[in-house]
Length: 177
Image 1 (cartoon, helix red, strand yellow):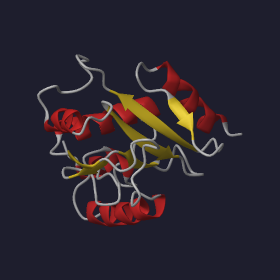
Image 2 (cartoon, one colour):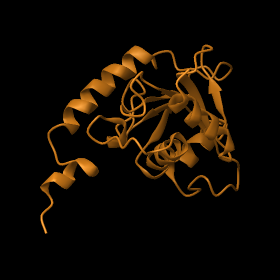
Image 3 (tube, one colour):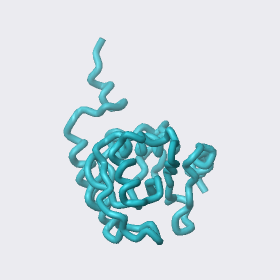
Image 4 (cartoon, helix red, strand yellow):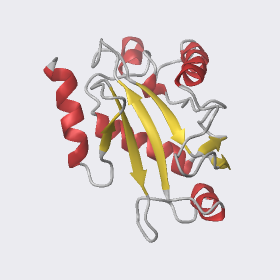
């Protein structure tokens, strides 16, 4: 197995509060649960997302799935929300996440997976993301949150990011001193 793929996965468990779980016994796909305990500083306690999680009597966590492509780390991972059903802000109808570092234009190969998971948590926590439904609490699933649907979201997201200026290293070519 490619050590560049194994290394980031091994690093993730060392980050407090974000243990990965391998999905379907494949080392290229894993889920990340971002725990949010009452009183924890991990979550903006004054935020709408925290209030919605409490209102719906949900565990204070957001489940994500991160899938590494064959070209990782030179190509960005694919990430999506698994549970609960979220809407608004940077989350699309089928669980796709609008975040430039997840696009070929914005991905930086030096970004670690723990840093990516924390950044995604940040845009969910401080954006206008709301809980739209609870799905199946027992299995922690949302029926229409499928990988296929989230990939369709991602295709639309990537297409929209191709037109503007990149906020990462890609825009350096336009720099002049």
